[in-house]
Image (tube, rainbow, N blue to C red):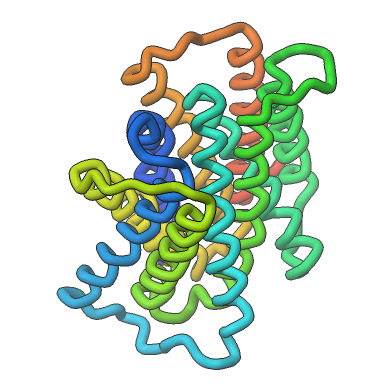
Length: 294
């Protein structure tokens, strides 16, 4: 494995760990902040933080976004308005540990979009991992019951992951450009869009302390996480960056158990086992490991 690939993998893992903070901390902040505005503050924090960071450190990429990149930029911004709003409603309506684990469905969405629209190759091993992750997600969505009664919180989370699956592939098309510029645009325009949506739907919030806390979380869990995610995408692609990003839900679930004292139920344990199997298969595919390969 080349040194550039190793560095990209480390970036993807760091992005995953930083993003894992999002669900449990957002669960706490959502007790004070309305969901659409919470999504807006998170992304504004990412945009402002990365914007300030860009003033102190020059991006090694000299390429800036061009007019030809506009369709991908618009797609990125629109999807980044919808996804965090869906996620906040999901966090409000289900346990943070379940939300964290369901976030792994983003691998499925990203890979399927990469295959169908952008023609990235998907191996049999990766398909196997996707199957396990999908079954685990269904189990989490039904609360372990053999019925078609889905949890609305889980549905919102899955909607968020599908939006981010498309968004990951849009970002992949422009990931060779200035990372600072991409994250700044993501944060400012997507954050403003979510805040406007919140205002139009009657949400109001003016407690500066909680706003700053949400923006700080956004800078770390979205801004820095997205920054490292894009750097990883440049080298190993959208589908494989998402594969290493798969550790994030497990870290998020662990944090939820520790800090929110959520219970470990039987169906969650079964879903966790399936999710681990699927994630191991996905990561094995990313590493180039194949059955019988020496």
